[in-house]
Amino acid sequence: MALLATHLCVVSDHVEQRRRDLVFQYGVLVLELVTGQSPGGDGELVRWVQEPGFAGSMHRMVDADLGGAYDARELQDLVIVARLCTGHGNDAAVISIPQIVRYLQGKVERLGCENRCG
Image (cartoon, rainbow, N blue to C red; front, side, top):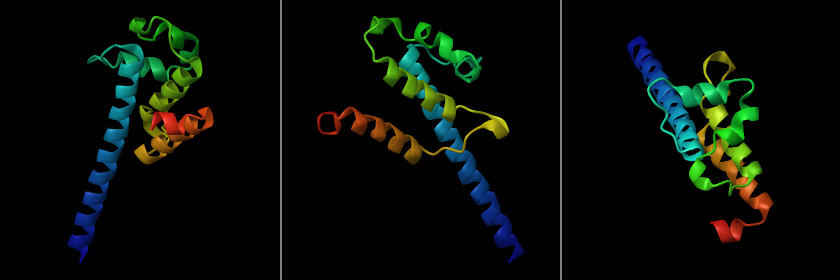
């Protein structure tokens, strides 16, 4: 019985780690889409979004190919999602992909375009 409990604990830890990895990868993907940059091996994008003053440099980090044609509120929402997803350590928010989807769906519904956008 103890062996089974140990195995279940190991499996549970593995599932939780995989969930955290997927959430982190989603945050990195959002950063790549917003900035048009790959994350690079040094984690520059993740460090940027985790810095206390990142909000002041947010508009400078937007993909130049957008040519300034983006909604600042939508940008802020995406960067907030990326920040939550890529948090580290004990300060990291426990967030799941379904929570992210509900958050973003709520933003779409408030814009009144749920029928046009999806």
